[in-house]
Every structure is written in C-alpha cells, then in structure tokens.
Length: 236
Image 1: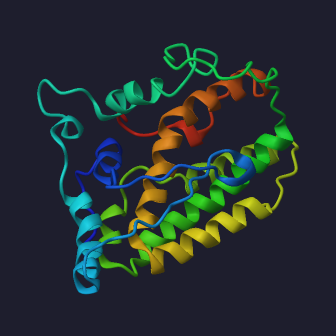
Image 2: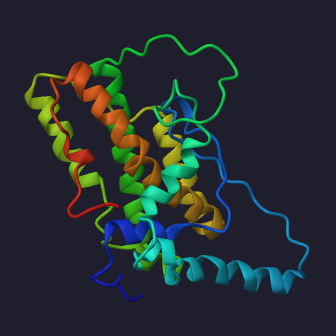
C-alpha cells in the first residue's frame, strides 16, 4: 500500500480519477449527489472480474495528454468546463449553450441555517471519502491519499468559525448520513462505482461548487471566503 506520490497535485488528482463510466444523479436534497449505475458485461465471469480489477488502477496511473498539462493542451478543468457549458442554459451559466426547456426557477435565496446543514453534511461525506482511501480496503485506493483535494479539515475550521459567530452547528442530516453509508458500501462491494462517486464529488466541488460558494458568500456572509473553497496551488 504505497502512499500517493508527493508530487501529485490537486488538479492532477482530479484528472487521474476520470473514470471509464460516470453516472449522473442527485445527492439527495443537497443537489450534489451522484448515483452510480452498474454496467452489465457480456464477458465471461472470470474475464469480467479481471477487467473490473484493472479499470480503476489504470485510471489511477494513466493521464490523457490534455489532463497531464503537456505543452499545447488545455488545462483539465478548462476542458471539462467547455463540455459542461453545452449542458447548461444561459439562465444557469453565462456561457451556457443549451436551450431552456422550461421557465427559469424562482430567485434563489440561501439562508445561514440551510448553508450550515450543507456544510455539516459535506464534512461527513469528505471525512468518509478520506477515511476510505486511508483504510484502502482495495489496495489501489491508497493512490488517492494526500492529494491536496482533502476538505474535511477545512470544513472543520469553517464550522468552528460559524460557532464563534454565535450560530448553532447541527448534526449531520439523514441525506448526509445515508450518502456516507452508500460510499462505505460501494467502496467494498463495487470499487468502480465508488471511484465514480469519488471523482464526481471532488470535481463538482472544485468546479461549480466554487461558483455556488461565492454566490452564497455574497448573499449571506458579507463576502467571506470559507476555507472549504481554498486550495494550495492552482486547480487548473
């Protein structure tokens, strides 16, 4: 169980995680969750088992040229953003290209209480992800230790700041605990599905999550930037 290379950056860690299949869905009421779907294989049982064992380790050791930062290539996040904008309307993002299918939703007004619930559940989810790769029940999970993407310590500091401002920090809610349990289950029973969740949670936070955090800060936190949205180095 060798630890991840020291030179592995947060941006490279995300690019290494790009799985062969990424499912879509919702993370319960937080609107950040992903639901992984199993892929039916026509290969013989023995071949299918061997194939499952090889897919994610390959994702952890190979990088496409665009993700590796080779000269002349786009940064990983920029490339993914271009694809994502084709799925957004202009109501959702300034660069959106998709035609809206329905009227825009009502004006969004966040609250401190609701945001705290999101942060508390997020802390539980990131703690769970970090514990799984640290435990490495599947040996190659250890490749994703100490990448710089870890968020639980930053969230711990942010929640302490809210306490100091006089806010009551709640316990994790049912959606958060349910999703954390699902991650634990998948990490042992379906490594491919687990890596899909791992990738999506981290990528969602480093991309659209930063934009949402900025908007919330402007509306209810007097533009304070939480530690949750800070990383060492350049994510691009």
